[in-house]
Length: 132
Image (cartoon, rainbow, N blue to C red; front, side, top):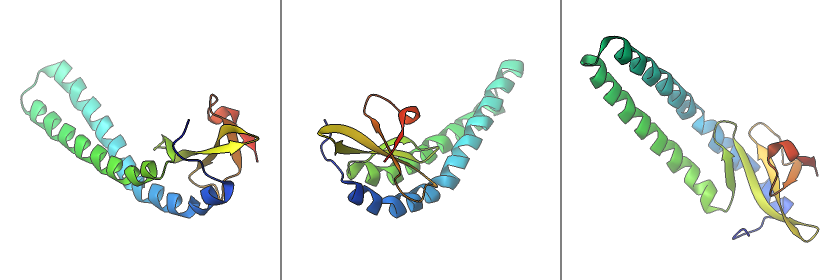
């Protein structure tokens, strides 16, 4: 059971704030993807020709990755604190615990949607979305 439930109106009232939050995360998400790619390339070059300078680059990239991950987590924290469930940072996908016909369900929204338009049972994910 969730610690808090949202009415549709309450959840819809948070959509523009969520949209801004996920838009602000876009450059950090992009940087995270770039760092993952760079680290993979560095790990492959270590495998093919040993360590040395590449080890130092790899350590630097990993520190950058940790820092970027922490920044993303800091920006996501206010969403969690409001009782909203972040399902995908990449897609800007969140669920709002809600009560529908006497049972717990999730109101579902993802970045780019003008408002909350769907819901799903708590034991099904995004694929089980149903229109409101």
